[in-house]
Picture 1 (tube, rainbow, N blue to C red):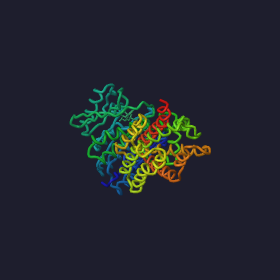
Picture 2 (cartoon, helix red, strand yellow; picture 1 turned 180 degrees about the vertical axis):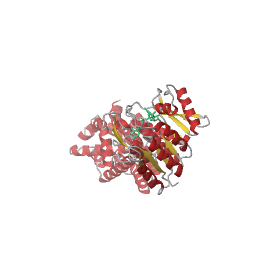
Picture 3 (cartoon, rainbow, N blue to C red; picture 1 turned 90 degrees about the vertical axis):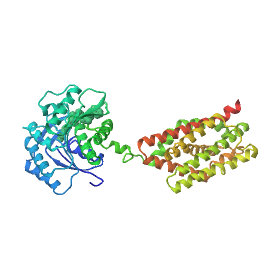
Picture 4 (cartoon, rainbow, N blue to C red; picture 1 turned 135 degrees about the vertical axis):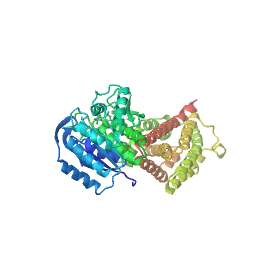
Length: 490
Ligand SMILES: Nc1ncnc2c1ncn2[C@@H]1O[C@H](COP(=O)(O)OP(=O)(O)OP(=O)(O)O)[C@@H](O)[C@H]1O
Ligand SMILES: Cc1ncc(CO)c(N)n1
């Protein structure tokens, strides 16, 4: 087998795309396989029920099956709706002649809506197909029908029935417990020798379960081709199914029991639904609008703009800022060390150098050399630098970049806004100008670009984590801007 398993679905259709071959092709793709499909019957159905079934003649069905197997080497086959004895026997004969490596049979008899999907003599004909398969996946009702017994109402009964069917035909039976009461989504795998294993996955509270059985069996066939046992394939398929069921809530397909969302797990990993960097930029910046407004309203920032700030508060701030910048430079060096490309590495290394050399030029005009870097850090300073150091210590570049961004971005924004309103003769003008410097602007833009580009290609979970860390740093910025007027007043 190559890297991509070639998986054939032999099943009926669902024109609304939630069950049958339409669901199978998506599920095979989601599991990393190349999907193919042979249609056994055309079903006029939707999320509310089955209206009509058209059964093509079995000669044509055999023609479809052979067209595939004469040309393509199959790695796994999933069999779904067989409708009646004629179709079931045609598929049986084809299985006997071609003997594909891994065959899953989902013995479809009724749809999720409760409508029958079987015609004449299917139950007995299925007994001739089952021995040619490796795994049969009946739900509670189907298992009872296949054995000619009442449907199980408890787990011990279901396991007993699965074990009997497995022994009767010499196959594995995965009895699906979706319709039995339990807190989890539990299925029982019974082997022909009497061995039983229970598989559990998170149960999703939803009515949108149209096609779960189809999706599970198609996923199982694909994972079986990619792993070396059913025991390895089942947990993968079930985890994926639970996530796809949960994501089904985002779909708005039909008025009845809606479909699962088979590709949602892939979309979440950063695919077609991922935002572009410009959207991330707006989202993150708007997400701290409240904090930015509070920063601009601090006594410190308004005092700077009006030139009325107590110079002692400003000197106190600069002393804390130097202490901060020294730690910030360390944090930027660590960020540089984590960078995936030489360009980004050199960028952060440059930022680190500037934090100590460039920015402190202004500070040195206000603070005597012997007092530079010697202030005892205030609580707000320590809390901010501890946060940044902790994030970079985790060794994750994306969150490190998100954490350092507010310092650059908010300072640049504060400088820019103050620059617009500063009156002539403002004693803090050189400080304000230093943050309007085109070099600072370029550096800020590049940092935003790096962070938002990484965020745009990250998974949803990572992007959310990046934004959370970005906001936490912005909260520390607010505390840092508040501290000088609080501390010097004390
Ligand atoms: N609410 C749920 N949350 C998570 N998994 C579920 C849920 N309901 C069913 N499952 C799982 O989905 C698979 C299909 O189970 P179910 O017993 O519903 O089969 P089915 O009746 O053949 O499905 P269909 O609804 O397509 O007819 C099983 O692995 C089952 O454990
Ligand atoms: C074609 C087809 N196969 C299986 C099911 C079971 O959900 C369905 N509704 N339609």
